[in-house]
Image (cartoon, rainbow, N blue to C red; front, side, top):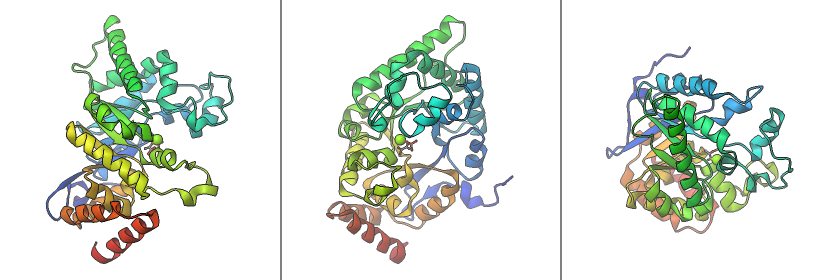
Length: 332
Ligand code: PEP
Ligand code: MG
């Protein structure tokens, strides 16, 4: 088992001009939580809870889910833990069908545009509330935040929020005390519609998290899992950068916390532009934390702001890519 050998790992990440950047961990299984803490994560920015379902012979019940979430919360020793509610469907659906999660008989021709993620949870409120009750119970043990995946409209966010309130009432009705206040509720920004209404979401949500993997897929209409079009996918495309800039502005206006939890958040070139655009919180696989903290410590935020300004005015993803590559080689 790996021990904290490197003091640098657990120190916060400050740029040369002393701007703090929060570095959080992404996990899929509770066992990864210790690794995040030991590698210097300041919290969990994304716990992809669907993996508890995908790897089990049958869906975990409330108690099993509670145990899984509680384990993560305890491992983080008071640091924030962001639990994302079920993000099933699309790429994850073939396995879901095997263990009986796929209740709908229709074979989806375009599963990425179908009944996935929060849409699916809202269609099955009992299953959703079961998960929410488990999360609320774990929230009594630490700093838990609830993140809804693939929010597409404000209405979906409101429906999900109402179900959290209902889940808390259900706990109370059976003599179990829900946390008071209820945990902060966040929306993932991973479809263009959510980025375009980020001001409205930022007003109602307690925090936002940009899922760049899906945001890139849905913005450029490029299947993230299809190797035939992988070369057409770029988070550095001006269209994607514009959407991210919109979200940053909306979060600032409403003083709403904002994190990036997709793969761009741990890619060095993308990190330069994300910080320059105003991001101050990044969530990533634990193995990337050391590299990205090291990168943050070698840059000056004022330089990155100028760089992001320059990048946003370029026409092509390839030009942004070259600019960032040159900057990394020359200045960082
Ligand atoms: C994303 O889409 O960027 C994201 C973090 O969620 P996932 O990769 O689990 O779809
Ligand atoms: Mg996603």
